[in-house]
Image (tube, rainbow over all chains, first blue to last red):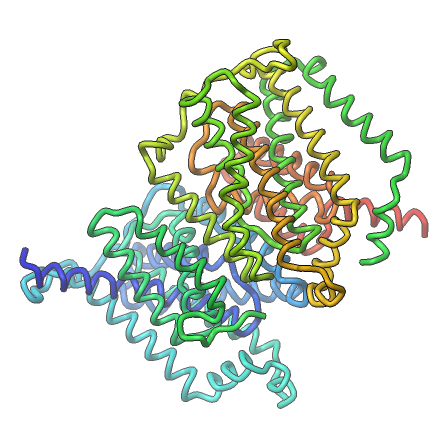
Length: 291
Length: 328
């Protein structure tokens, strides 16, 4: 393989990985930004999304239809969780919400194991997505390109939603000055529930698109949770632009690490996270904030 | 909160009697129940109890949340194991000392970085450093055995003043050694927590800003609290490897770490014996439910959710609630 082919391969792979990371991390970020809840069960919701996608496709639904339906199912699960479990502890110290969502993570993992068992699953892809496409001397799988496209569509959709619609503007305002928003006569209960549901939709999308990328197993969410923590910390808590930058950075580092089979890469990433937390707590772009 | 603090300060003679009774029962336990399985189970409870207690010094007294306190148990265990394998296979006390010293030396620069922050940033930092240690231990195959874990750790004899008391490979002897060390650490921690130093830590937990206004160097005291907690974790790591003779990287994972957090929560934050009780309950639950059904995660998760929602102060809180109820 020529040098350009390898370079194209690495760049595309890191974009795909970074894209999935970005969608999960932004979901986590939105939930934190609006309701100050650091949701440790987010990785499990992502895994639940992947399993929902698997079941929908296995029962005969089209892959793209599953991509639309599964996130909505996860959003419903998220709404139930938010109403029943998260609301009573919102006013308490962050330690309690952390431990509560940690218990929730265990519970969801247990549910996944109960319904789907331990063995790995694969999402059946439509015929055309199983082929490869020649790009600059390398044969790149079509489903990865579709994944990339889905990520782009989801991100653009999110940006338009947050930037142009009234609902999105309310959400953004509530994440910077919640008191003022509630003074404007907007019901914060709906804002919190909506933010949680939006985060869950994003986790569901990421779950379905990562189904063909990796194998689906009950612990797939754990690694993703830690990676998305790294992303939102490096990008700055609550900062969307920072998260985009950080996600592609981490995607690139992980892809390079896989390519050169080096184990040091993740150590460097964690070191970077530690240094940024300690000395630049507002993230790479200086937009994040801690409460 | 201040009311609670003063209440805890006074040492009722009944408390000392209760402590002595509990210790006596624990000492007699391996002679009454001779089943090796139960002795090992209670031994594990004691070791994790020590770890949970050390985390509580950080969480319940200083108000700092550590997600991966088990990383320091792991570091202590690996150091003691490697010392016994490569340096001196028969010197138990030297190995334990090496474990504590190396754990502290590693924890010092980590703590120096960590105490610059607080709250959520501190918690995420412990995650970053813990994952770093976990990855290093997992990937450094030639030293730690990687995924397979550290195997073939010798069981040295336990000697006090030249008298051999027995091999640490014997569950009963090992149990008594753990009990002895955990008890000493408990008394030491109790003394430290009830000294002016402990009061400073509690002041930092209650309000960092006000603590700094009265002239307390908040960062330095946070660092002291952190170092003490990591030292105790190192001790528990040494006991862990002696008791089990094996350690794998999963003991240091983030999810095992959150288990330790759960022990503190189940028992109740801000008391010393609470986390030990919590560790007992947690290990019993994990062990018992996993033999009953393979879906133990479902039950553990449910218990944690219920605890946070209905019993946020743990079983200690239940005790307080009952005594208040009786008075009324």
